[in-house]
Image (cartoon, rainbow, N blue to C red; front, side, top):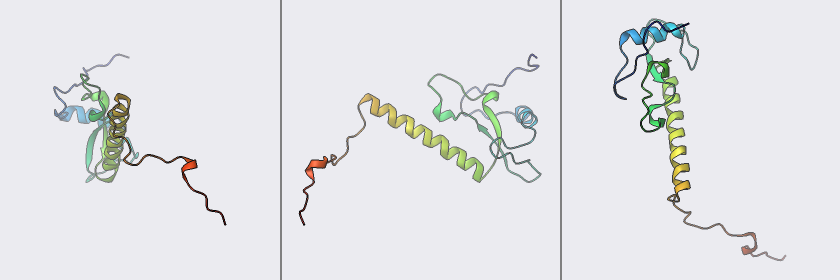
Length: 121
């Protein structure tokens, strides 16, 4: 079945989704948080999170689009997701730096097993 409306794509990473897009996302996910499955009730803080974090996007790709957004419960649930995204970014940067040979070497080299003197009793 073809999509009836065009997918919303943000002009930049900072462009917030309009209300019509937020409503479509809430309907798509059945009024539930996509991480915890919590059914949203009046008074809940509803935020919209990028499923694949913008900080992890390859250069030149625009991930600020409707297909990459989902409703998430604000507060602890969203903070945990953000922490995971940042951890993924840190690991990727560390692996890239190591591959390029710019990762700092250990200040104290590992000693071999033979370098430890055995004491006789």
